[in-house]
Length: 366
Image (cartoon, rainbow, N blue to C red; front, side, top):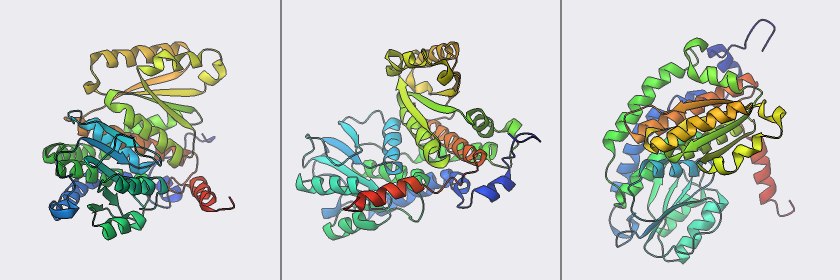
């Protein structure tokens, strides 16, 4: 905070700091859902029969989605929106597939760039197990693999950051699951979610004053504080998303966990270092689909955290469907992380430390 008052978070500050336009991409989430769903369905309709069919010959006996970072979080979100899927489902963040993956397993490899080495390894291993993995990518080696092997491939627009394409990647995956007959169509839910995001965008935009902007208010609460985000049931992947967005956009430490597990261990971690507790903010993300018991637990845990000196806030999802509610929470977290970046004077888009690490990882001498 300056001597003249709190730092402005309006359009002028955005123009000064957000050189790569991350906030504009956040504002495009509704369009990503609407356009991404329609585009992915159209692409898959051309590949629904023959060797490039998404589904195995018989009904899939399992589902594995392989991805990392911003390319994986969409899988977590989509699966949280589809509790009725009746086959075992897993999101793999790494190089290896579960041992139970076989020819009837639907494997979907998601890499925004098409160059993620862990995802490429999983796609190769899927082929060795008799699977024809479906691919979601903007191009790169994963796209080339799909072309050369005749694999089903949803091509998403490239050129940005994976985390800024979460709507496109999520809708591509949802369309692929529909094509594989693991879920029904979701035209109405996608339309509802897009409408919800468009309405909320006007309430969270830079031109909206702090006094009436939940994202700006929350960003100011988080400024210079340790951020911990907690999910319960369907909001667990959203908590992971918030954590990652604070890390990458605001370049600040953040952590996430889930209820009820944290009440059996992490709650004790705030008891012996009061100076750490007083420097933290705990955010509890809740949704009605989690049920009354988990909702009550979130309220009680937040109250206990306050007693231990941790500033706490319960944030409830809003919307008419699970898809709308979860993505409205994603939208809020994306805005909060960008406003926090502006408070720190950081352009939200660059991730120099990640790029430097990747370069070192690919260097045989590194």
